[in-house]
Image (tube, rainbow, N blue to C red):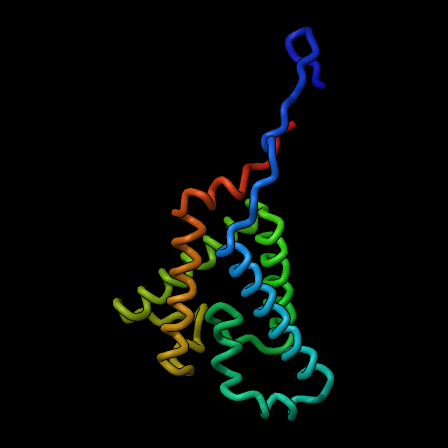
Length: 168
């Protein structure tokens, strides 16, 4: 209850029934969890002095490039990107609007940066590793980012799954 205009008003919740989590949301959050766990594993192996174990992971640079969303982090940045992916995955799993907005923004930024690099020849200080990985890896990342961006931004059911925060 809330006091408004000289009388008590009962507030109704925004959600009257729990919203089912669509399968693509489950896949997107699982992908974020996988990326975060992989980056943290690489960071832990590198920090613990077992960097030799990393040599056994095939195409490690390409995997880190996809998991770090178009970057090639080293040291503490691996922990940062891994933690970020886990937090976003958790937010997507719990259907938080901030996580959706963050993932839409980062996916859109990746697409814009790549278009600026590819079509206009702009050098990308944000993504210096784009020229060091296989071209197929870049295309896989762009495909994933395009699918995530289009689904989270333009799919009608998805917008209903991520309700705005209730104002008190």
